[in-house]
Image (cartoon, rainbow, N blue to C red):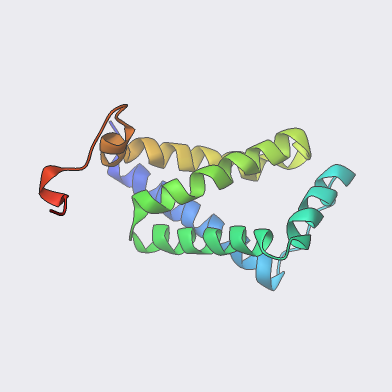
Amino acid sequence: MFNKTAITAARYALGLLLLIFGLNGFLHFLPMPEMPEAAGRFLGAMVETGYLFPLVKLIEISVGVMLLTNRFVPLALVLLAPISVNIVAFHLFLDPAGIAAGAVVFLLNLFLLLAYKPVYEPMLRASAGPRHDTVMA
């Protein structure tokens, strides 16, 4: 169903986007665009906490590296899921003009989550228990 080339391209594109924007959160090499007042207050509050903005950017960098190196990709995609949903929600509610990049991140994340669906199937069961061979006596 999913083309290996498309999966690889999506993984590299998403990894690169996350690495660039994650690093920009610390190094500030890309200019911040003008945004509505409410959006600025929201981002300011994230920065003001002293931990939330750096944590999100550190996760973006880590996920970007995992995707680019093809290591722990299913874990990376799960770590990114709430961030990508919040990027879209931020732009939908606070800065609609900037939604394009957020939509790209969300759609690439969704595409890759679906491509790796077989990996997640065991944890998506409504009722599951540990495998018997992994339970400690």
